[in-house]
Length: 229
Image (tube, rainbow, N blue to C red; front, side):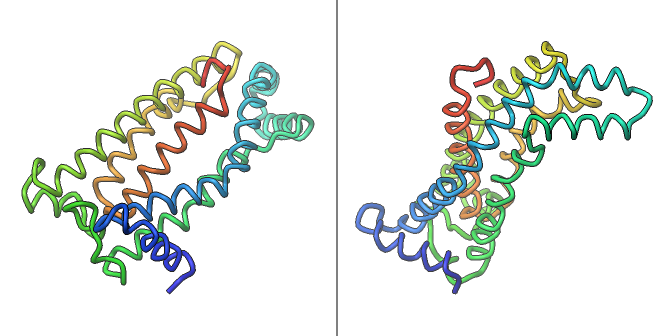
C-alpha cells in the first residue's frame, strides 16, 4: 500500500469518532486540503505570474502587431519579454500538474482497490453516478449525495466562469489578444468539472470537488483587490 493510501487510512481512523461510516470520505477531503496546502506556494507564484502577464498584455499586443507576418520572431520576442520581466508561462500549470498523481491515487484506490468498500452516507466511494441512478434514481439515497456535489460544483463553476470571463475582458481592454475562439471557450471550461464528477468514482469526485472549491477560494484570496478576483 502506498504512503498516500496509508495516510488516508490514518486520517479516516482519526476522523471516525466524528464521521462514523463516512470517515474515509472525510479523510479524502482532508487529504485533498493537505495536497492543496502543499502546492499553495506554487499557486501564489502562478498568481504573481498571471498578474504580470496581465500587466504585460499591452506590450504583447504591440509585439503581435509588429511581427504579425513573422510568427517565429513573434514567439522569440514574447519569450524575451517574459524572460526580461521574469514571468514563467508554465507557472500557472504547475499546481494542476502536481495534483494529478493525487487524483489518480483516489481513482485507483476506490476502483476495486482495498478501500473500495467505504461510503459517503449511502453512496459507495467506489461507485459512480450511473450506479446511483440505477439504485434509486436521482432522488435516491445515493443519488442525493451526487445531487449535493453537483450543486456545489455548479456554484463554484459559476463563480469561476464569471471571474474568468472578467479576466478575459480585462485582457482585451488592455490590448491582450486571445487566439481563435479561446476567449469564449475558456470561461466555460469551469463547468467541465460537472462531467468529471459524473463519470469518475465518488472518491475521485470528492477530490475534484474539494480541490475545485479550494481553487475558487484560493484565487479569491490571491486576486483580492483586483477586478478579476
